[in-house]
Image 1 (cartoon, rainbow, N blue to C red):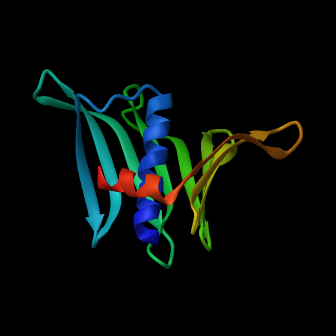
Image 2 (image 1 turned 90 degrees about the vertical axis):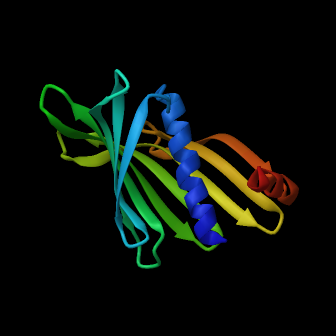
Image 3 (image 1 turned 90 degrees about the horizontal axis):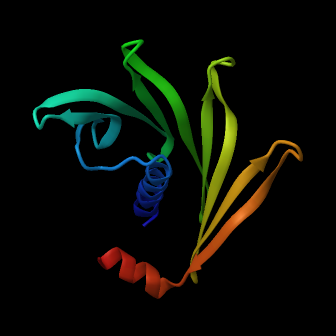
Length: 162
């Protein structure tokens, strides 16, 4: 159950980020490199003229000792530099029935993911799932709650069956 939830969270967060960045899934091809049953790297290519593949994005995954996704690093292809350049990283942490996902942007000056902008908290309990979205307030050095949404067990079952 927890592994399914974690994967659902990864896909949900990716979908949200893609929607925010206006990334459409049409016209893309994918190549996934696996390490056993774990995704190691996924390359995304733009399909040109229905036959040519052009580098677009690269996802690199890391896992914790329990086999759960601990980070998803996203790099974008730079035509000028002819290489993938780091964009952002989704860092996952787990605490009982809670999954935290932090969005950290790449800071080329620091050469690290130091610019944490947002985080999402998914709390799983007997009554359903609670979702909270936060934005980092640099001025106050604290997280500001932006959105909160709860689902009931019936809603989760209906969603899973579709």
